Length: 255
Image 1 (cartoon, rainbow, N blue to C red):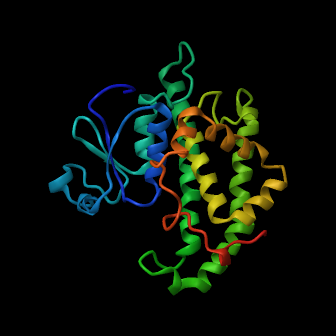
Image 2: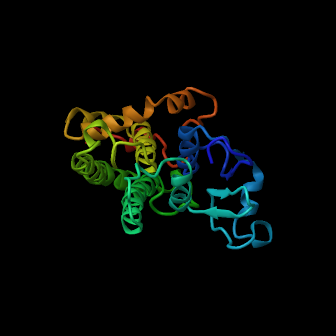
C-alpha cells in the first residue's frame, strides 16, 4: 500500500482525535496518504446499508478501501492495515502459517487492551450515560475518576510494563513486540498522550515512581519517530479537547 493509489478514506467525526486517531497514526507512521470524511455526512454512514453497502456499520471510525468496500471497528481496521503498512512486526524467515497467526494475535491483543483502556477513560466523565451532559453526572464522574486514577491506570501500566519487560528483543527499547514498531506501539502511544492530557497530576505522580518507565520510554520513542514527530507538530493533528480524553481539573489528582 505505501505509495500506491487510489487512497483509503477514513470516515470519522471532525474536531476530535477520538478513535479515528489510532487509524491516522498508522497511516502517518507509514507515510501513506489517505483521505478523510469528517463533516456532517459522517452520521449518514451509520447503520445505513443503502449508503455503505454490506455489512452495515454501527459507528465510526470506518475505513473506505480503494475497492469501495467499507470496514469498521478500530481494532479491526488496524488489524487489516497492519500488514499493508508494515506494522505487523518483523516476519521471521520461514515463518509458518500458525506462527504468523500467533504473531498477529499477540499484537492485536495489545491493541485491544489499549482500546479497553481508552473506553474506561470515556467512562470517567460519562459514567451514567453517554447521551447525558457531563454536568448532569458530575458526582458520579468524580467517584468513577477516583477509582480509575487509583486502581485502573496503575493496573494498565503494570500490564504494559510487564509486556515490555518480557519482550527480551526490544522491550527495553520501548517496543511491545519484537524490535519493530507495530500497531500495538502506536495505540499505546496515543493512549498515553491522552492520559497525560486528561490526568496530568496523576500521570506525573506515576511517572515519578519509575516502575513504569518502560511505558514512558515507548511513548517517547514513538513520539520521536520522524514522521510521527512531524505529524504531531502539524495542523493535521487534532488537539485533545471534548473527545474521549477531556481534562476536568476536578477529576484529576495525584492519587
